[in-house]
Length: 140
Image (cartoon, rainbow, N blue to C red; front, side, top):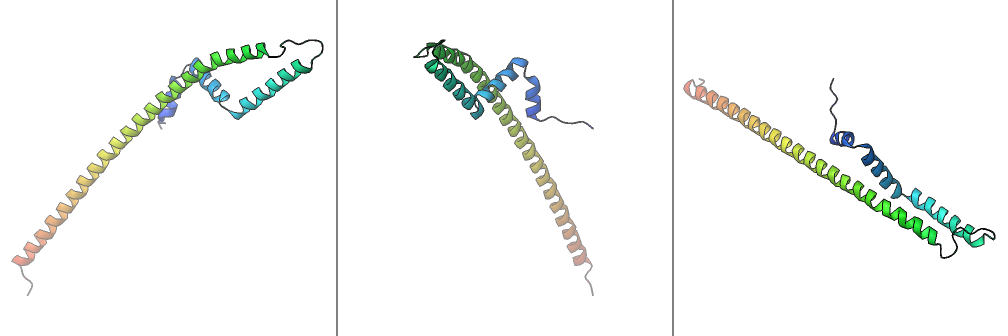
């Protein structure tokens, strides 16, 4: 028995490692879990630097933290854009698959309509034939 793959599975098979990684990173960065973890890390970073008496690795105004965020943004933006481009590709593929399904359904409906019309014509022909026979051989 042959298992047919839907377009989601076909598209997923075409993705290489980098594409899958970018999708995972974009999905992770767009989650509440990421925001909460990042917020906790920022609060810890600032707190340790504000109250640390001996060693401040990033004193106020937290220039190193700003550099970390800038680096994160520099990498996150293109990764998210790559994921969005792939989402656009998936949307186009889905739209094409939907369009093809609609075309196939339309052709089937038209074929069924012709078949029903043919059956109706056959029935009418039989009824007419019966009426002609009844006219030619009236019942006494």
